[in-house]
Amino acid sequence: MLRIYGGVPLSGETSVYGAKNAALPILAATVMVNGTTVVENVPDLEDVHVMVEILRALGAKVRVDGDVIEVDASTIHSTDVPMHLMQKMRSPILPNML
Image 1 (cartoon, helix red, strand yellow):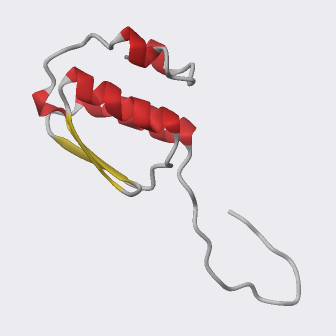
Image 2: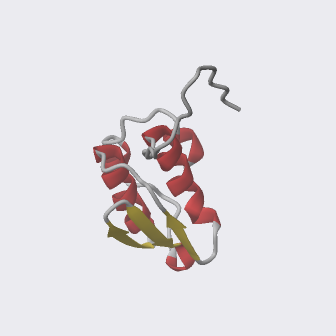
C-alpha cells in the first residue's frame, strides 16, 4: 500500500512496463504448459528475441505481436537448447531453468 500525505489529491494514470527479469522466466515456464500461453507487456529486448528463437528451436509455435507473445508448447519435440542460442543469452538465470 502506498500512502501519500499532503493537501492535494492525486489523480492520473501510469503504465507499468514489462521487465526482462520477469519476462524471461515466464517465457521459459511456457514449456511446461501443454497448450497455448499468452504473455503480455513483454519488453522488446535482444534476450527476449533469443528466448523466442530458443522456444522455436525446441518446437514450440511462437507468435509475436508487439508486446504480446503467444507460445503453443504442445508441439515441442526437443529438450536440447542449441548452444549457439544459449551463448547469446545474457541472462544468468536461464541456463539453470532450461
